[in-house]
Length: 228
Image (tube, rainbow, N blue to C red; front, side, top):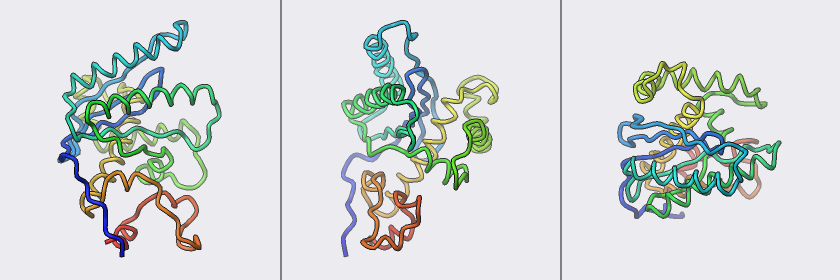
């Protein structure tokens, strides 16, 4: 029976979750122990009238400044939302991928761990309970606000110094990424697995008979028990 891979990096104390966008990237820093949000914000690029290369350069500078201000340390985690399964606008998707790359590259150069990305459909299924056919955007956003309001609405309002109804949707979405990411990190730690391993797609069985459609990339508690 295969032995679990042990993590060897310094124990993390924080996790920063990212909802990437060139227009406005929401971020939330969490304390891993308490799972409480510690800081929030949005990073915005310049207007579309500015050449893209210059917008990305300025965006990178803002990300670097944020990392410094938040005192993210060696071994802390950065987790970004991954691309949506269906890309309707390739040009927009390319820009967002460059934004993800900025966050992840700066994180790695700072000594943070970047174990993988979170599939937005996984968040919708596991945190919002929205399984089956993809729901329309407005319904998903409304569900996200309701769940985040219940979990940490008062704390986000305090951090933003705004009524929760006025907290940016980008921050709400980043908060959901953080909730899901923390659960995955803690699942890995509890089972003695490398966090990086649990952020990779689960390998399907040889026959595929034990993998339900749509669940093949998610690790369950029974999957972990089989590996121990």
